[in-house]
Length: 205
Image (spheres, rainbow, N blue to C red):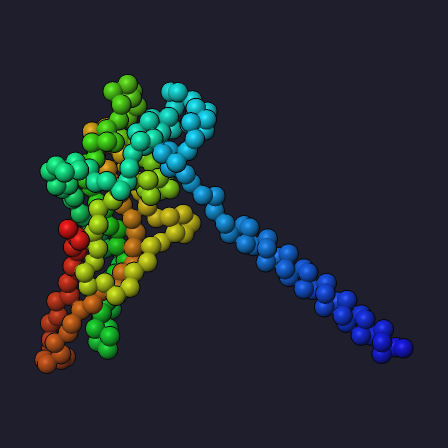
């Protein structure tokens, strides 16, 4: 009888622990989920109407309500000039075995999108600092690192992206990246060798 009671106690305790663990897991999953941001072009007319008329949010909504990020600026017209600037935060050691190196950088890109010109009735500053969540709503240049082996964005404590929209339609985005880049080495003169490691940026076009 005592043995039977002991088994019941163990079974009850196991069920209790399993239930607590499952609740904790579901709670963590719920906390980990971010609220999905909808671009103005994806929002209903009722949602857009709730935004105060003279607010910055309304200005952004007016710019993006019919904006299609799949279409480049000046479609079927002149090419889009993209200015690129890189600031190196840190430079890792060159790995002879894997023939690569790692850098932590700020990648800045600037281009003009006539669709994003601020309205003439806008009385604010010359530029708007926009939340990074809106970056997905905009057309972006197809810049990539041709000799990239591995890369990652930084998102602690928030996405490390700074986004500006200027009065004339200029867009400036700055993002922090860590990139591992290939660097073929000629070690014939090692240890008296000199190496040149490239950072190759290209466009698909």
